[in-house]
Structures are given as C-alpha cells and as structure tokens.
Length: 179
Image 1 (tube, helix red, strand yellow):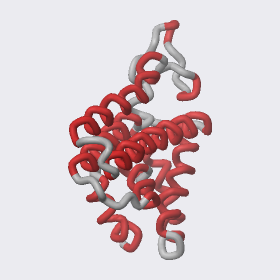
Image 2 (image 1 turned 30 degrees about the horizontal axis):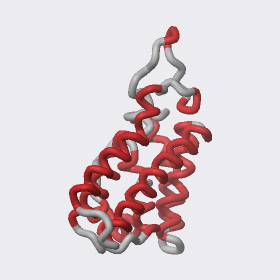
Image 3 (image 1 turned 180 degrees about the horizontal axis):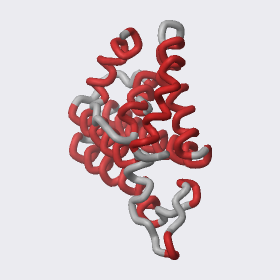
Image 4 (image 1 turned 180 degrees about the vertical axis):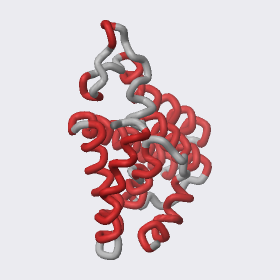
C-alpha cells in the first residue's frame, strides 16, 4: 500500500479535509495525511518517515537561521544542504530492508532503495534540497512553520509527485482548502 495504489486510500479522507478546511485549514491538510501515512506504511514506518522528514526540515531551518544571521554564505549553505540531507538518507541505502518499512529482504539480499521511492523519502529529499537552495539564494524569507509543514506533508504530492516548490505550494494552499 506504500506504492501508487495506496493513493486510493486517501480518497475516503477527502470528506474529512473538506469538513476541517473552513474551521482549521492547516489541520485539514495535516491530520488526513497523518492518518493516510499510518494506513499505508504502518505506524512504525509512518513514525520513521515523519521523524526523518522533520529532521531534514530542522537541518534546513538551522542552516537558514545561520544564513539569515550572516554566519553562513550562500555556497557553503547549498553544500551543507546537499551533504546533510544525503547523510540523513544514507541509512536507507545501507539498511533498506529494515522491518520498519515492512519490506523484508528476499533471501537475505538487501533491497536497495526500497523505501526511498514508495515511502516518499526521495520526493521529500528533493523538496528539502530545493527549499534549502532557495533559502540560500533568498535569505530572510519568513519561515511560517505551519505552512511549511503543510507543504512537506501535502498528501497528493507526498510520495509520488508532483514535485511542488515550497513557494508555489504556499501560494496554492488557500485555493486547495477553499475549492
């Protein structure tokens, strides 16, 4: 269910999104996504996914804060974005058959990249890199943490695309919730 067919499991959650949107717009995007992740990954896999995504976002925020304070230049920040986020994903390459993802290795052979695509780490990694590079190029942009979480955990684009840049997604959130 972590693959493209798992997207169908989000359809029953659409009424919840529509009901919550006028009252609590950010919760309307975050709660159904959390329920969907648990249903399609398993609770431990969803927790690992959320933890990894939040760790990557925290890395970008740390670098962006240093950049805004003038303690980190544009090029070093871009380099640290790439290096830090790839270090974060490295364990998935070496131990891709962790039981947390629900994919045991066949016949003891490691399954490389198994969780990277279906679980969504590949898309989140690329989105975080784009955000970090954008922040390095344009320091001083307001963080707006709730909006950033909605961008990171926007269910229709979370695991299988489309790849949305943070600025484009933040502009479209009001339209998603109203229309």
